[in-house]
Length: 239
Image 1 (cartoon, rainbow, N blue to C red):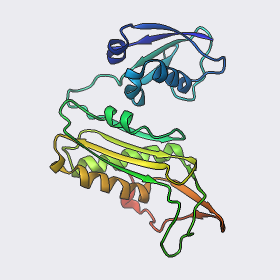
Image 2: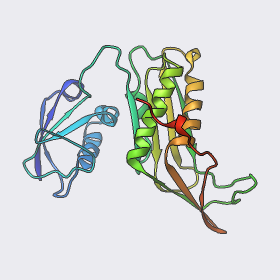
Image 3: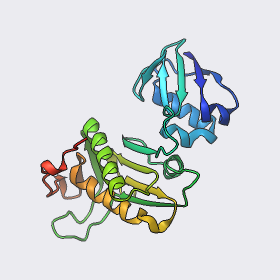
Image 4: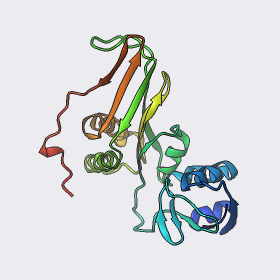
């Protein structure tokens, strides 16, 4: 199929054009278009994490199917105040791109970024856990999980107002030892303004209220790993 891609703001500036004619597979989706753009124009890859997309003048999402002749718009979030702080909340089956995510939450005033990344262990030396893991199978209640990620970010900003950008990304699907599974990143002007504490809070809070589960598979069999925390009314989002 052939589509017309309209580019605005930063994307237009980076590519040097406000209009591209793009040819894609007949069953292509918005996610396929983003992948094409990241490969063809590496300079804009970092911006694709937060870019908004429209198809025929209506907001579209990664799963939205494209059609031959579609007019697709690609643009940053609509302009607000000058103190806007970037957020990324995402459940994904794709590989976590640390460079793209940190670039997307970096402002001109950013001087520090603290990143926590969890990964699959191949061996576990802890009572109650299987000693060896072949792989983990992650699943999530995606709409609720992303909404609760927003809540975690709101809580971070309430405690550490100087935090600039926040990225919370959880990978799902089958993941093998050594593979990053989750990322929490916080940026700020300086390293001593709470980014370490904010990132630690973010991962701890994610484990409490964001509905993500994992099944552990190893030589001894398989089992879903369940947590111990039971949310209370205090964990409900109030705004």
